[in-house]
Length: 172
Image (cartoon, rainbow, N blue to C red):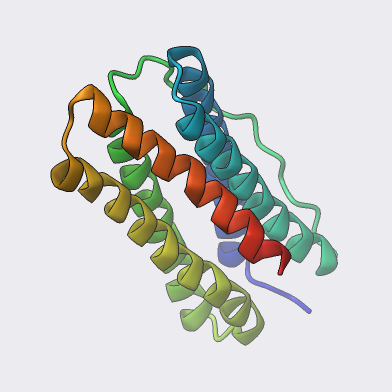
């Protein structure tokens, strides 16, 4: 099957976006681990793995079409975080950027009448709805529970339990 150069370039750009997202989450996990947010560390290590899996999904899609995927160098992620709340807000902004890029790819696939790539991208469209909702819900916890040390400890526990529940659901 042939895909257009526009789609090919877009998918390779998405590989880069996913790789950078994985590294950003890895940096966030490292920060959480050093600060003592064990739940946050587990959560962001899992997020990093998830973004890498998304990247590999696109790599395999291109490779299965006989197109060698472009494996990018990644940007040095920030490691200067201020708080658990601020990294969750940064993560939401990152997910919103990924969503916008996926939507642009869908538009290109529609314009090119590339039904196979369009169908492939639908999984990512649905995934991004879940990702943005997840971070929006976590950020709301600061308004609901608070920002004092006890509240942040509770939010850290919520982050830990979300990793456990995701892993349980994924293995079912």
